[in-house]
Length: 234
Image 1 (spheres, rainbow, N blue to C red):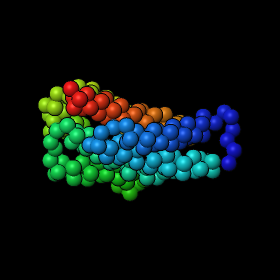
Image 2: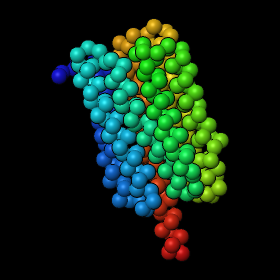
Image 3: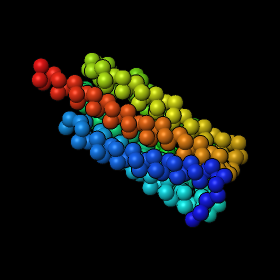
Image 4: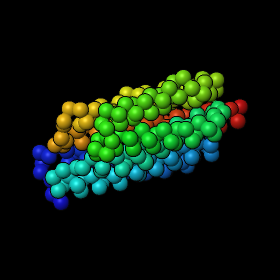
């Protein structure tokens, strides 16, 4: 397939694809740079980027034919976003105690958050109801991150690198992920048919929502591992 030089949407698909692949390699390499308890967190983040890259490749091929059906976005999100939420769960578990019940709640809620939005946007469910349910699920995740046991565990740990990393990760889930319900709202209620602009916005957002998320986890894990090694040698 050959894209036109002025095709910014195609360029955004390619940039996001290459960026996600590069981030995946970096994170997988990074598992050798952190202590044992952090390896799972970094690996899960790498898996989220790999899934994103595969979904991006499929969508890029679809764009070459002239359009990107909504399903191409959601097949990646329904896997990568729950993986990122679970990465946050295990991230907190490295420094504090979190209940197993929270694990399953986060799995179910994060999957349904994406799936319900898809049902509404694809016309299988009332668009208003789907939007509101998806919004409630996202707010539940934010509630756990800001006011739940995960926030308590991080604060009580007293681990400064983890506290800083958790701040930035939580900010990404709050600010960066806001583009998804916003896009859902525009397409469901504004009658907007994506001619490439919305896909471009989603692709640019991936630099924050997937790539920066993974790099932040790796950086935090490396700093926390360094502190642990220094404490052991002191």
